[in-house]
Structures are given as C-alpha cells and as structure tokens.
Amino acid sequence: LRAAGQNDRLVIDTTGANLGGGDNALQGITLQNTGGTDIVIDKITATWNNDNLIEEIRINNTKVWSKNGHDDTPTGKQPSGTELNIQDFTLAQGSDVIDIDKFKFDGRMTGAVFAITFTLEDGSSKTVSGIAPQ
Figure 1 (cartoon, rainbow, N blue to C red):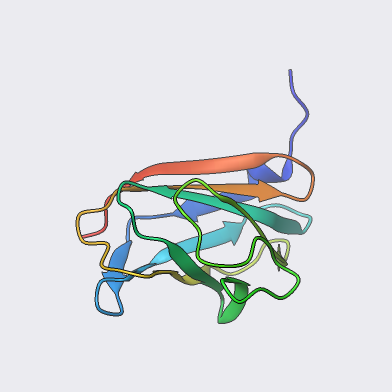
Figure 2: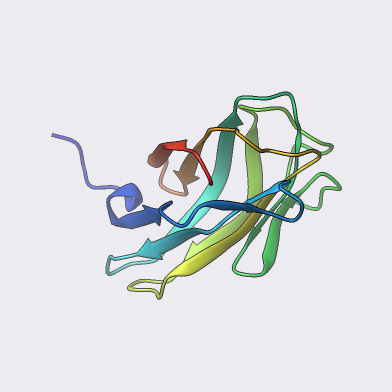
C-alpha cells in the first residue's frame, strides 16, 4: 500500500483539448484539486510526436515556464520529453476548475498526440496520455 499523495486529488480533464493560436498551442485542458489541502505543481513533462519545440506554458493566466527563463529551467525552446521545472503553481484545496491556457510550440501541432506528466511538490505525479486535440 502506498501513502496517498497530492496526485490522488489532482483531476486533469482533457476532453476539451484543442489547438489554437494558428495551431501552435495546445489548450482546453483543465485542472482541479478535489482534496482538503493545497496541491503544488513543481514540474511538467510534455511529450508529443513531432520535431517542434515547446516555448511556453501558461496556467490560469500565469506564465509558469518560458523559453526566456525566470526561476524556471531549462531555458530555450525544448524538445518533447524534457522535464520543465516550472514556477511552482498552487491549486488551492477544493479549488474551482483552473485552465491551462496553453502549451505553446514553435510550429503547427496539427495531428500531434500529447502526453503530460505533472510532478507535484510531494514527489508524486500524474500522467495523462493519448491527448489528440481536434
């Protein structure tokens, strides 16, 4: 038996996933914390099946990772599968549904299939895969 982690309370909804911004941004994914304590997202690892590079991640209108860097690493555009140490994002306990505004890429993502792993402050993680935006 494993101890319950923050990942047990993280709800990720990809049913509304779509491409925007000239087809270079994955959007329409939402997050929710259904638990009684805060969840802190520490890192995000996205994978996709083309050679384009990720440039930015924005959650709830906050830029949490950018190719230009802040406290987030690594800097520069990154390939599929790179673990991005984002500016920690807190989902308050029993929070409303929060939008991931976009995963922005340097080219068109038409036909791409995505998987995203959220690594949380307590070391637990949650992955959603097979995201094929229409």
